[in-house]
Image (cartoon, rainbow, N blue to C red):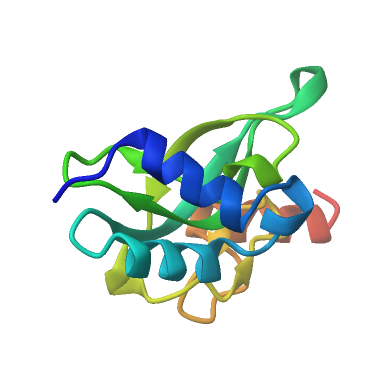
Length: 131
């Protein structure tokens, strides 16, 4: 049986009513929400592209959310952010979990790397060497 957005929203309000209660709880909240709606939802891991104030570029932050059978995002902890989530980027599970953030561009690094790409390797080394 498929549930409605109203039922999902009710569950979210009952379990994570405030931004503070939702803060840093996305992994646990999505597990609990899928348990509450096992035939409707699945968990997704990736990056949430969060709007920044003052015209700054959006921040990509590691995040968990749910999707329903139609692929529509149901995010039990989206209200933890002071601004809106602009888009969701599904993680490439073949790369495993992120192992850090690139000091050059801020993107996530994988496979134990310290920088996210060859381009950032080059740019960061030029910065370090004062070029």
